[in-house]
Image (tube, rainbow, N blue to C red):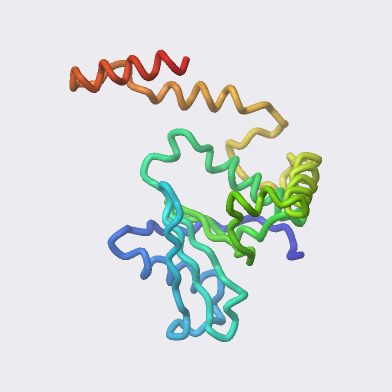
Length: 194
């Protein structure tokens, strides 16, 4: 496990018109020893709002660097500083890859090889047992709230965040929509869920 150090924030904004060029810039910072002409990029397409690009060398395809570009306005309901702190805590506990750096609209971190589980696989008793064990292990972690986190404006003491997050998310919902038909449907659906 690598030493737990402060994370560099790059003064870089990855524009969606040149994501691959921006991803190469981030990779050159994280892996300066990689020859730029040999870096291969893979775009992952399963995200809902984020864009995810992996960078690797053919000779070391198991050593992939992931660059996640945040979706527009997702910072309104996701506390990115807390997310980074949690990712670092998970890494320090041996449950996730390291975080290498952040940039204006995203984050760069290591890759965990594996595959996505489908509905059939999660029902397999051996796999569901492994999932349960990892979740139990994850829920025993107590984040350290000391200087090594080096994240300004991040809570320094553990605090529940579910209801705070829900209130923040609900606060983003408009009180009315301009289109009358959409507004009626919106009011009906929203009230039926509250």
